Length: 331
Image 1 (cartoon, rainbow, N blue to C red):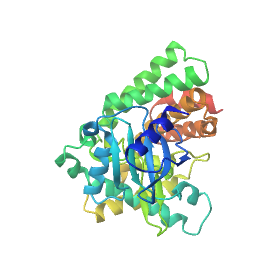
Image 2: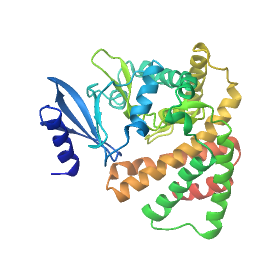
Image 3: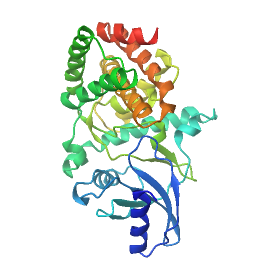
Image 4: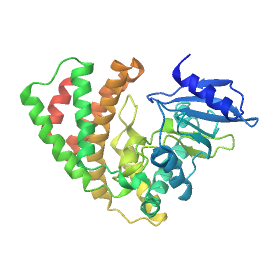
């Protein structure tokens, strides 16, 4: 019996609930999820790797923030920091990614609804600061962005390829990563989900869309979640025309929701910068997860992230080292 299951069963017994459960897939998470019965109804139990302090627990804090901002996230039913368990309402099993892969006639509508959700999250920026949410105290600053880029460099070249960069290549990437991170920090002004992709959106039996895995929310670029949604875990880069259409849709939704109007050309520049950083961050995660945790289903997504990053750098006519070094990986 795993320590996760043992703690969950002890917790359920202590709450007078049935100790039976159904294990659910947790993807790249270090948490484990279970479907349980709570007072006769289905609920989801999230079991963390260890105990947590409820006052500084990101998921509890960000859930309060999102609910206060009118955002659709699961209600917390119960939690116990000592057991490392949070119980929340059950939203079902319909994940947006699966629905988008089924070639349904409503695919475009669902994607636009998800894009609208990004703008809605950004409307809760002021609420985050008013509540002194943990999310308002975290930021995609230069240090954080650079850490993610270095994580990619470490785990793609050393962990995954087992072929460290040469010193000249390492120095050139280091300089461009620092430049990229510094510039992106200047755009970090709004609340971001931080991992906003189609596997973290669900539809309930009434076809209402819900946000999950929002515990890592922080202040970042208006483009961050949009890049994540449109470009995460794909094998073929979408056309520039399609991306431009989705950017315009997003900018229009932001304006309708009362957010500050963004210049389309300026936002395109920001989007491309964020594309490079976010896609390399994702490639680092895929490399780490496939090598260290045996989740090799991430491998097919690594090189597409490179192709998208290269295209972004080419569109900007910048970052020659990124274009050259990554280009050598996809040739």
